[in-house]
Length: 411
Image 1: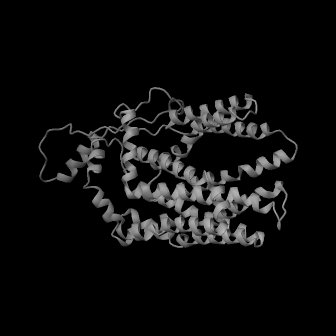
Image 2: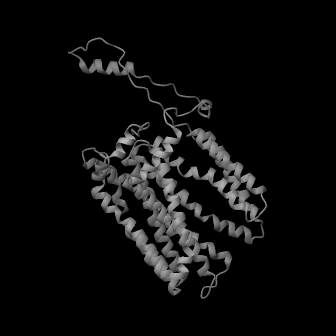
Image 3: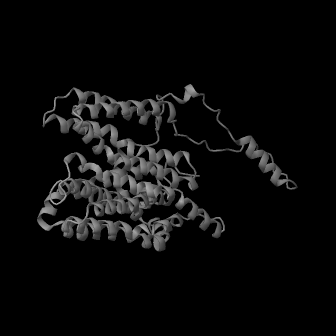
Protein backbone atom coordinates (compact mmCIF):
# COMPACT_ATOMS: atom_id res chain seq x y z
CA UNK A 1 0.00 0.00 0.00
CA UNK A 2 2.88 2.38 0.69
CA UNK A 3 4.07 2.88 -2.93
CA UNK A 4 0.51 3.08 -4.28
CA UNK A 5 -0.53 5.68 -1.73
CA UNK A 6 2.65 7.70 -2.28
CA UNK A 7 2.33 7.59 -6.07
CA UNK A 8 -1.29 8.69 -6.18
CA UNK A 9 -0.81 11.40 -3.57
CA UNK A 10 2.13 12.71 -5.59
CA UNK A 11 -0.05 12.74 -8.70
CA UNK A 12 -2.75 14.55 -6.73
CA UNK A 13 -0.30 17.27 -5.65
CA UNK A 14 1.09 17.61 -9.18
CA UNK A 15 -2.37 17.86 -10.76
CA UNK A 16 -3.34 20.60 -8.31
CA UNK A 17 -0.18 22.54 -9.13
CA UNK A 18 -0.83 22.24 -12.86
CA UNK A 19 -4.49 23.18 -12.43
CA UNK A 20 -3.54 26.43 -10.74
CA UNK A 21 -1.47 27.39 -13.79
CA UNK A 22 -4.33 26.80 -16.22
CA UNK A 23 -6.36 29.88 -17.19
CA UNK A 24 -10.01 29.73 -16.29
CA UNK A 25 -11.31 28.60 -19.67
CA UNK A 26 -14.31 26.39 -20.23
CA UNK A 27 -12.42 23.75 -22.21
CA UNK A 28 -9.33 23.23 -20.06
CA UNK A 29 -10.87 23.15 -16.59
CA UNK A 30 -12.94 19.96 -17.06
CA UNK A 31 -9.90 18.22 -18.53
CA UNK A 32 -7.83 19.27 -15.53
CA UNK A 33 -10.47 17.89 -13.17
CA UNK A 34 -10.34 14.53 -14.96
CA UNK A 35 -6.58 14.35 -14.46
CA UNK A 36 -7.05 15.45 -10.87
CA UNK A 37 -9.68 12.76 -10.31
CA UNK A 38 -7.22 10.08 -11.41
CA UNK A 39 -5.08 10.88 -8.40
CA UNK A 40 -7.84 11.47 -5.88
CA UNK A 41 -10.23 8.69 -6.89
CA UNK A 42 -8.01 5.88 -5.67
CA UNK A 43 -8.04 7.40 -2.18
CA UNK A 44 -11.54 6.01 -1.75
CA UNK A 45 -10.37 2.42 -2.15
CA UNK A 46 -6.94 2.33 -0.49
CA UNK A 47 -8.10 3.26 3.05
CA UNK A 48 -10.64 0.42 2.97
CA UNK A 49 -7.90 -2.01 1.93
CA UNK A 50 -5.68 -0.69 4.72
CA UNK A 51 -8.45 -1.23 7.28
CA UNK A 52 -8.79 -4.82 6.09
CA UNK A 53 -5.03 -5.43 6.18
CA UNK A 54 -4.27 -3.84 9.54
CA UNK A 55 -7.26 -4.23 11.85
CA UNK A 56 -8.92 -7.33 13.23
CA UNK A 57 -12.41 -8.48 12.29
CA UNK A 58 -14.03 -7.06 15.42
CA UNK A 59 -12.43 -3.63 14.82
CA UNK A 60 -13.37 -2.99 11.20
CA UNK A 61 -16.83 -1.56 11.79
CA UNK A 62 -15.46 1.30 13.87
CA UNK A 63 -12.55 2.02 11.53
CA UNK A 64 -14.74 1.98 8.44
CA UNK A 65 -17.09 4.32 10.31
CA UNK A 66 -14.28 6.82 10.77
CA UNK A 67 -13.45 6.50 7.07
CA UNK A 68 -17.09 7.07 6.10
CA UNK A 69 -17.53 10.16 8.27
CA UNK A 70 -14.35 11.78 7.00
CA UNK A 71 -15.27 10.97 3.41
CA UNK A 72 -18.77 12.40 3.71
CA UNK A 73 -17.61 15.54 5.51
CA UNK A 74 -15.96 16.41 2.21
CA UNK A 75 -19.42 17.43 1.01
CA UNK A 76 -19.00 20.64 3.03
CA UNK A 77 -16.31 21.89 0.62
CA UNK A 78 -18.67 24.08 -1.46
CA UNK A 79 -19.69 25.94 1.70
CA UNK A 80 -16.12 27.06 2.37
CA UNK A 81 -15.54 27.90 -1.28
CA UNK A 82 -18.66 30.07 -1.36
CA UNK A 83 -17.58 32.12 1.62
CA UNK A 84 -14.10 32.54 0.15
CA UNK A 85 -15.55 33.92 -3.07
CA UNK A 86 -17.95 36.19 -1.21
CA UNK A 87 -15.05 37.57 0.83
CA UNK A 88 -13.51 39.00 -2.32
CA UNK A 89 -10.87 36.34 -2.75
CA UNK A 90 -10.04 34.73 -6.06
CA UNK A 91 -11.38 31.30 -6.92
CA UNK A 92 -7.77 30.20 -6.99
CA UNK A 93 -7.59 30.54 -3.20
CA UNK A 94 -9.83 27.52 -2.74
CA UNK A 95 -7.58 25.45 -4.98
CA UNK A 96 -4.49 26.71 -3.14
CA UNK A 97 -6.07 25.51 0.10
CA UNK A 98 -6.88 22.17 -1.52
CA UNK A 99 -3.30 22.02 -2.82
CA UNK A 100 -2.00 22.59 0.71
CA UNK A 101 -4.15 19.76 2.05
CA UNK A 102 -2.90 17.49 -0.74
CA UNK A 103 0.72 18.24 0.18
CA UNK A 104 -0.04 17.56 3.85
CA UNK A 105 -1.70 14.26 2.88
CA UNK A 106 1.33 13.25 0.81
CA UNK A 107 3.73 13.94 3.69
CA UNK A 108 1.48 12.19 6.20
CA UNK A 109 0.97 9.12 4.01
CA UNK A 110 4.68 8.82 3.23
CA UNK A 111 5.68 8.67 6.88
CA UNK A 112 2.66 6.86 8.35
CA UNK A 113 1.18 4.46 5.77
CA UNK A 114 3.25 1.29 6.01
CA UNK A 115 3.51 -1.33 3.30
CA UNK A 116 0.99 -4.07 4.12
CA UNK A 117 1.90 -6.59 1.42
CA UNK A 118 3.12 -9.73 3.14
CA UNK A 119 4.04 -12.99 1.42
CA UNK A 120 3.52 -15.70 3.98
CA UNK A 121 5.96 -18.58 3.68
CA UNK A 122 4.61 -22.11 3.84
CA UNK A 123 5.82 -23.82 7.00
CA UNK A 124 7.62 -27.10 6.47
CA UNK A 125 8.69 -29.77 8.85
CA UNK A 126 12.44 -29.70 9.42
CA UNK A 127 12.56 -32.83 11.49
CA UNK A 128 11.78 -36.28 10.12
CA UNK A 129 12.24 -38.02 13.45
CA UNK A 130 9.35 -40.23 14.58
CA UNK A 131 6.81 -38.75 16.91
CA UNK A 132 7.13 -39.74 20.55
CA UNK A 133 3.86 -41.45 21.33
CA UNK A 134 4.20 -40.65 25.00
CA UNK A 135 4.55 -36.90 24.42
CA UNK A 136 2.80 -36.07 21.15
CA UNK A 137 1.74 -32.58 22.16
CA UNK A 138 5.21 -31.55 23.33
CA UNK A 139 6.82 -32.77 20.11
CA UNK A 140 4.22 -30.99 17.98
CA UNK A 141 4.82 -27.76 19.85
CA UNK A 142 8.60 -28.06 19.46
CA UNK A 143 8.25 -28.84 15.76
CA UNK A 144 5.95 -25.86 15.15
CA UNK A 145 8.25 -23.55 17.07
CA UNK A 146 11.33 -24.67 15.16
CA UNK A 147 9.55 -24.51 11.80
CA UNK A 148 8.20 -21.00 12.18
CA UNK A 149 10.31 -18.44 10.38
CA UNK A 150 9.51 -15.16 12.09
CA UNK A 151 10.73 -12.25 9.93
CA UNK A 152 12.78 -9.55 11.60
CA UNK A 153 10.97 -6.30 12.18
CA UNK A 154 11.85 -3.60 9.69
CA UNK A 155 13.39 -0.37 10.86
CA UNK A 156 11.54 2.89 10.35
CA UNK A 157 13.72 3.83 7.38
CA UNK A 158 13.14 0.41 5.79
CA UNK A 159 9.40 0.90 6.13
CA UNK A 160 9.61 4.15 4.14
CA UNK A 161 11.01 2.36 1.09
CA UNK A 162 8.52 2.44 -1.77
CA UNK A 163 10.50 0.63 -4.47
CA UNK A 164 11.12 -3.06 -5.01
CA UNK A 165 7.64 -4.00 -3.77
CA UNK A 166 5.65 -5.75 -6.45
CA UNK A 167 2.96 -8.39 -6.49
CA UNK A 168 4.48 -10.75 -9.04
CA UNK A 169 1.87 -13.49 -8.64
CA UNK A 170 -1.03 -11.43 -10.04
CA UNK A 171 -1.57 -10.54 -13.66
CA UNK A 172 -2.32 -6.81 -13.71
CA UNK A 173 -4.79 -6.66 -16.59
CA UNK A 174 -6.40 -10.00 -15.79
CA UNK A 175 -7.03 -8.81 -12.24
CA UNK A 176 -8.82 -5.70 -13.53
CA UNK A 177 -10.95 -7.75 -15.90
CA UNK A 178 -11.75 -10.31 -13.21
CA UNK A 179 -12.94 -7.60 -10.83
CA UNK A 180 -15.95 -6.92 -13.07
CA UNK A 181 -17.30 -10.38 -12.27
CA UNK A 182 -17.98 -9.19 -8.72
CA UNK A 183 -20.99 -7.32 -10.06
CA UNK A 184 -22.63 -10.75 -10.24
CA UNK A 185 -22.15 -11.30 -6.50
CA UNK A 186 -25.30 -10.14 -4.62
CA UNK A 187 -23.45 -8.91 -1.54
CA UNK A 188 -21.08 -6.76 -3.59
CA UNK A 189 -23.85 -5.51 -5.86
CA UNK A 190 -25.77 -4.35 -2.78
CA UNK A 191 -22.81 -2.22 -1.71
CA UNK A 192 -22.55 -0.76 -5.21
CA UNK A 193 -26.23 0.17 -5.39
CA UNK A 194 -26.19 1.53 -1.84
CA UNK A 195 -23.32 3.92 -2.51
CA UNK A 196 -24.54 4.87 -5.97
CA UNK A 197 -28.13 5.56 -4.92
CA UNK A 198 -27.30 7.47 -1.75
CA UNK A 199 -24.72 9.62 -3.54
CA UNK A 200 -26.64 10.09 -6.78
CA UNK A 201 -30.16 10.49 -5.46
CA UNK A 202 -29.62 11.78 -1.94
CA UNK A 203 -26.56 14.02 -1.94
CA UNK A 204 -26.89 15.35 -5.48
CA UNK A 205 -30.61 15.99 -5.08
CA UNK A 206 -29.98 18.03 -1.95
CA UNK A 207 -27.01 20.00 -3.25
CA UNK A 208 -28.61 20.78 -6.62
CA UNK A 209 -32.13 21.68 -5.55
CA UNK A 210 -31.73 23.43 -2.20
CA UNK A 211 -29.84 26.49 -3.53
CA UNK A 212 -32.47 26.93 -6.26
CA UNK A 213 -35.34 26.76 -3.79
CA UNK A 214 -33.89 28.77 -0.94
CA UNK A 215 -32.81 31.76 -3.05
CA UNK A 216 -36.26 32.08 -4.67
CA UNK A 217 -39.54 33.30 -3.10
CA UNK A 218 -40.87 32.79 -0.48
CA UNK A 219 -37.48 32.22 1.20
CA UNK A 220 -35.31 34.79 -0.62
CA UNK A 221 -32.07 33.75 1.02
CA UNK A 222 -28.87 35.24 -0.31
CA UNK A 223 -26.70 33.13 -2.58
CA UNK A 224 -24.02 33.31 0.09
CA UNK A 225 -26.14 31.32 2.55
CA UNK A 226 -27.48 28.81 0.02
CA UNK A 227 -24.69 26.39 0.92
CA UNK A 228 -25.71 26.19 4.57
CA UNK A 229 -27.56 22.97 3.82
CA UNK A 230 -24.21 21.24 4.33
CA UNK A 231 -24.62 21.98 8.04
CA UNK A 232 -27.47 19.47 8.03
CA UNK A 233 -25.01 16.90 6.69
CA UNK A 234 -22.69 17.67 9.60
CA UNK A 235 -25.58 17.29 12.03
CA UNK A 236 -26.70 13.99 10.51
CA UNK A 237 -23.30 12.38 10.60
CA UNK A 238 -22.57 13.93 13.99
CA UNK A 239 -25.64 12.20 15.40
CA UNK A 240 -24.43 8.92 13.89
CA UNK A 241 -20.97 9.07 15.47
CA UNK A 242 -22.03 7.47 18.80
CA UNK A 243 -23.12 4.38 16.83
CA UNK A 244 -19.70 3.90 15.24
CA UNK A 245 -18.94 0.72 17.20
CA UNK A 246 -22.51 -0.56 17.29
CA UNK A 247 -22.09 -3.23 14.60
CA UNK A 248 -18.90 -4.57 16.18
CA UNK A 249 -20.58 -4.80 19.58
CA UNK A 250 -23.68 -6.50 18.22
CA UNK A 251 -21.62 -8.98 16.21
CA UNK A 252 -19.43 -9.75 19.23
CA UNK A 253 -22.47 -10.46 21.40
CA UNK A 254 -24.10 -12.68 18.77
CA UNK A 255 -20.79 -14.48 18.22
CA UNK A 256 -20.61 -15.28 21.92
CA UNK A 257 -24.14 -16.69 21.83
CA UNK A 258 -23.21 -18.73 18.75
CA UNK A 259 -20.44 -20.63 20.59
CA UNK A 260 -17.74 -18.34 19.25
CA UNK A 261 -18.62 -18.80 15.58
CA UNK A 262 -18.71 -15.50 13.71
CA UNK A 263 -21.02 -14.96 10.74
CA UNK A 264 -21.03 -11.93 8.46
CA UNK A 265 -24.75 -11.22 8.95
CA UNK A 266 -24.35 -10.65 12.67
CA UNK A 267 -23.50 -6.96 12.24
CA UNK A 268 -26.52 -6.09 10.09
CA UNK A 269 -29.08 -5.74 12.88
CA UNK A 270 -27.97 -2.20 13.78
CA UNK A 271 -29.11 -1.03 10.34
CA UNK A 272 -32.80 -1.80 10.89
CA UNK A 273 -33.81 1.68 12.23
CA UNK A 274 -31.95 3.39 9.38
CA UNK A 275 -33.82 1.27 6.84
CA UNK A 276 -36.89 3.54 7.03
CA UNK A 277 -35.32 6.82 8.20
CA UNK A 278 -33.60 7.57 4.87
CA UNK A 279 -36.72 7.18 2.67
CA UNK A 280 -38.67 9.26 5.19
CA UNK A 281 -36.08 12.01 4.87
CA UNK A 282 -36.47 12.08 1.09
CA UNK A 283 -40.25 12.26 1.45
CA UNK A 284 -39.95 15.22 3.83
CA UNK A 285 -37.54 17.01 1.49
CA UNK A 286 -39.68 16.41 -1.58
CA UNK A 287 -42.90 17.75 -0.04
CA UNK A 288 -41.07 20.65 1.61
CA UNK A 289 -39.80 21.75 -1.80
CA UNK A 290 -43.15 21.13 -3.50
CA UNK A 291 -45.24 23.06 -0.96
CA UNK A 292 -42.65 25.66 0.15
CA UNK A 293 -42.66 24.55 3.78
CA UNK A 294 -40.52 26.14 6.50
CA UNK A 295 -36.78 26.05 5.79
CA UNK A 296 -36.13 23.94 8.88
CA UNK A 297 -37.89 21.04 7.16
CA UNK A 298 -35.13 20.93 4.53
CA UNK A 299 -32.48 20.68 7.23
CA UNK A 300 -34.41 17.99 9.09
CA UNK A 301 -34.84 15.97 5.90
CA UNK A 302 -31.17 16.12 4.98
CA UNK A 303 -30.07 15.27 8.53
CA UNK A 304 -32.40 12.25 8.56
CA UNK A 305 -31.14 10.93 5.24
CA UNK A 306 -27.48 11.48 6.01
CA UNK A 307 -27.85 9.92 9.46
CA UNK A 308 -29.26 6.78 7.87
CA UNK A 309 -26.74 6.81 5.03
CA UNK A 310 -23.91 6.49 7.55
CA UNK A 311 -25.18 3.06 8.59
CA UNK A 312 -25.60 1.88 5.02
CA UNK A 313 -22.30 3.31 3.79
CA UNK A 314 -20.30 1.79 6.62
CA UNK A 315 -21.90 -1.50 7.48
CA UNK A 316 -22.80 -2.75 3.99
CA UNK A 317 -19.14 -2.32 3.08
CA UNK A 318 -18.02 -4.10 6.25
CA UNK A 319 -20.57 -6.85 5.54
CA UNK A 320 -19.23 -7.45 2.04
CA UNK A 321 -15.65 -7.62 3.34
CA UNK A 322 -16.73 -10.06 6.06
CA UNK A 323 -18.54 -12.19 3.49
CA UNK A 324 -15.70 -12.50 0.98
CA UNK A 325 -12.29 -12.40 2.61
CA UNK A 326 -10.14 -13.31 -0.39
CA UNK A 327 -9.03 -10.99 -3.20
CA UNK A 328 -10.61 -8.02 -1.48
CA UNK A 329 -8.67 -5.59 -3.67
CA UNK A 330 -10.50 -6.88 -6.75
CA UNK A 331 -13.82 -6.51 -4.97
CA UNK A 332 -13.01 -2.90 -4.08
CA UNK A 333 -12.27 -2.12 -7.73
CA UNK A 334 -15.76 -3.27 -8.67
CA UNK A 335 -17.34 -1.34 -5.81
CA UNK A 336 -15.70 1.96 -6.69
CA UNK A 337 -16.37 1.71 -10.41
CA UNK A 338 -19.97 0.68 -9.87
CA UNK A 339 -20.90 3.35 -7.35
CA UNK A 340 -19.35 6.11 -9.47
CA UNK A 341 -21.25 4.93 -12.55
CA UNK A 342 -24.60 4.75 -10.73
CA UNK A 343 -24.23 8.11 -8.99
CA UNK A 344 -23.24 9.76 -12.28
CA UNK A 345 -26.17 8.23 -14.13
CA UNK A 346 -28.66 9.22 -11.45
CA UNK A 347 -27.47 12.81 -11.22
CA UNK A 348 -26.77 13.77 -14.81
CA UNK A 349 -30.39 14.71 -15.66
CA UNK A 350 -31.59 15.37 -12.14
CA UNK A 351 -32.71 18.98 -12.63
CA UNK A 352 -34.49 18.17 -15.90
CA UNK A 353 -36.47 15.40 -14.21
CA UNK A 354 -37.48 17.69 -11.37
CA UNK A 355 -38.56 20.49 -13.69
CA UNK A 356 -40.64 18.05 -15.74
CA UNK A 357 -42.28 16.05 -12.94
CA UNK A 358 -42.00 18.19 -9.80
CA UNK A 359 -40.18 17.86 -6.49
CA UNK A 360 -42.74 15.64 -4.77
CA UNK A 361 -42.94 13.13 -7.62
CA UNK A 362 -39.20 12.83 -8.26
CA UNK A 363 -37.60 13.25 -4.83
CA UNK A 364 -40.31 11.90 -2.53
CA UNK A 365 -41.80 9.41 -4.98
CA UNK A 366 -39.17 8.08 -7.36
CA UNK A 367 -36.00 8.71 -5.36
CA UNK A 368 -37.59 7.73 -2.06
CA UNK A 369 -38.91 4.51 -3.56
CA UNK A 370 -35.50 3.58 -4.96
CA UNK A 371 -33.82 4.16 -1.60
CA UNK A 372 -36.54 2.16 0.16
CA UNK A 373 -36.23 -0.71 -2.32
CA UNK A 374 -32.48 -0.81 -1.79
CA UNK A 375 -32.83 -0.65 1.99
CA UNK A 376 -35.39 -3.44 2.09
CA UNK A 377 -32.73 -5.87 0.95
CA UNK A 378 -31.42 -5.65 4.52
CA UNK A 379 -33.81 -8.29 5.96
CA UNK A 380 -33.20 -10.41 2.86
CA UNK A 381 -29.48 -10.57 3.58
CA UNK A 382 -30.04 -10.95 7.32
CA UNK A 383 -32.15 -14.07 6.72
CA UNK A 384 -30.77 -15.54 3.49
CA UNK A 385 -27.27 -14.02 3.26
CA UNK A 386 -25.51 -17.17 4.44
CA UNK A 387 -27.50 -19.35 2.02
CA UNK A 388 -26.70 -16.97 -0.84
CA UNK A 389 -22.98 -17.27 -0.09
CA UNK A 390 -23.26 -21.05 0.01
CA UNK A 391 -25.05 -21.03 -3.35
CA UNK A 392 -22.47 -18.70 -4.92
CA UNK A 393 -19.67 -21.00 -3.74
CA UNK A 394 -21.02 -23.72 -6.05
CA UNK A 395 -21.28 -21.59 -9.19
CA UNK A 396 -18.85 -21.15 -12.08
CA UNK A 397 -17.97 -17.74 -10.65
CA UNK A 398 -16.49 -19.35 -7.55
CA UNK A 399 -14.38 -21.65 -9.72
CA UNK A 400 -13.04 -18.67 -11.66
CA UNK A 401 -11.92 -16.90 -8.51
CA UNK A 402 -10.69 -19.99 -6.68
CA UNK A 403 -7.71 -20.36 -9.00
CA UNK A 404 -6.73 -16.71 -8.58
CA UNK A 405 -6.77 -16.34 -4.80
CA UNK A 406 -3.64 -14.48 -3.72
CA UNK A 407 -4.75 -12.86 -0.46
CA UNK A 408 -6.98 -14.04 2.37
CA UNK A 409 -7.99 -12.00 5.40
CA UNK A 410 -7.18 -14.35 8.26
CA UNK A 411 -7.90 -12.09 11.23
